[in-house]
Amino acid sequence: MSPQSLQIRRVAGALGAEILGVDLSQDQSDETIAAIRSAFVEHQVIFFRDQSLSPERQVAFGRRFGPLNIHPYVAGMAAHPEVMEIIKEPEDKLNFGGGWHSDMSFLQHPSIGSILYAVETPTFGGDTLFASQAAAFEALTPGLQATLERLNAVHSAGREYSAKGHSAQKRKSMSVVEAEGAVGEFVHPVVKVHPETGRKALYVNPAFTMRFDGWSKKESRPLLDFLFEHCRYEGFTCRFPWRPGSVAMWDNRSVWHFALNDYPGQRRHMRRVTVDETPAAARVAAE
Ligand code: SIN
Image 1 (cartoon, rainbow, N blue to C red):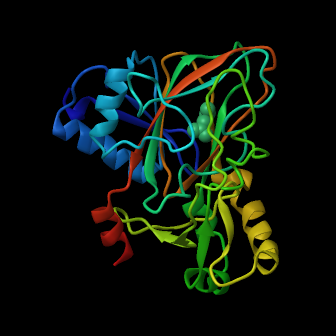
Image 2: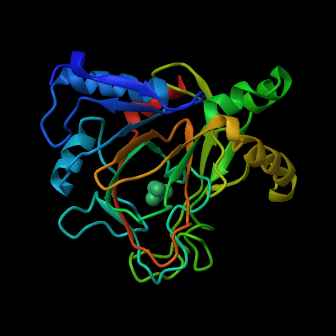
């Protein structure tokens, strides 16, 4: 597959593009991977339709972008621990990822991106929303931008994966381990400079950001609440309606996402691999 045959169609003003002309079940040339990577960092989330990806092929594709994460709190597939099955059964009330967040910011070296493949989709609903945190940063006044650029924030999985947390709620379909007592806190800049594009994005996370570094929770709350509200403004978003065989690949450094839970009584089955930031890349990003 030569990159010349790739077609890129933007889906919304702030972020998102559909990539046509690539069969992800096949081995890709370095040139094609470079073209996909370039579309991924430029558009922040890219979409593919009508793919047929076995767990092995999803792992192979994901590894072209970096090492794959093994989630510390959600069990992966027995034969493929890097592949997380995100399943909502008809009798489940809650879904996984049903609130604005980016993946894995609770790690010391957070993820650069997630690749989600739809195995089974409901007959209606179950779309995923995406929000550009680069657009969110750029819409702020220079004064607040400058203030935020001087701040760091503390991230932790403790709340989300506690017994009461949304992700750890008991559900029939997924095995989620409670994080109580086993979690660390990691500090990340509130404004992340994208290591590949240089574009700045807000990097606060409603699921995992606890407070600003050096501030108390109470002091942090008003500014975090303002940012969480601002960051999900409709003009920064796009929406992806899934079909079996659809793939979305989003940049966790600059994108929030939200899995809608609007398909009661129906099954939805996805498989996700998550690409880790390497410590070497993290050092470059921090310089
Ligand atoms: C997630 O990774 O948060 C799940 C997204 C989805 O199921 O649409």
